Amino acid sequence: MIFFEKIGNFLIRAFNDVSKYIAFTYQCLFYMFIPPYRLGQIADHTEKIGIQSIVIVALSTFTTGMILSLQLINIMRLFGAESFAGAGVAISMSRELAPVITAIVLIAKNGSSMTAEIGSMKVTEQIDAMETMAVSPVRYLVIPRIFASLMAFPALTALANVFGIYGGYFVAKTNAMINSTSYMHTMYFWVDPEDIWTGLVKAFFFGFIVTTICCYRGLKTRGGAKGVGEATTTAVVVSTVAILIADYIMTYIFINFFGL
Image (cartoon, rainbow, N blue to C red):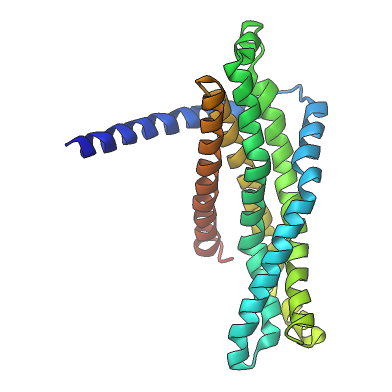
């Protein structure tokens, strides 16, 4: 009985939390279409989320492309079709791996930072002071971060495509000794524009999901420094699970409703 009671309490808390998050998301969407827009803050957050993350995203996706190419070449060698690994790497990176890996890297680097920063403001009563002065924390703190993420996530995903594909080419050329002309030809032949823009669309939504979840957890922080740490951990875990679920849903929609 105690076990089922704990499960029931967990489900009730989860339902309440999801309901509050949906209301928070609606509030964010409302403020996104109401000027003025704080362009200075948007630029600062874009620089932090986007430009300062280029190196880590490039390294992550370059090595992912290398590993993927190595595995695909090893499998396709059984059929004498090693040159098709280029198409496999490009399609896998552009459709799935580039947006997902970029989002996970940015969750660890920037999502946790958002939660910790806003959570620290919450426990030190800076958020309460803003509300006392009739300043909306959502409009002042969250909206600039959302706009920055909506620009940075797709841009970094596009960059991740380049580095991931080049990582695969690097392995094919140096390790597997595959003819570079046939490798690139099969890639150009099989990769369509739809493969690229579907990944960029996913990255756009990932940026919104990650930012709203991390900022929401920051604004709901309680309990001092310990609460900030717990909120940050929760934000990272929930954001990661959320983008994986969203990735499946969007992939299902693209395949079954748009034939992509």
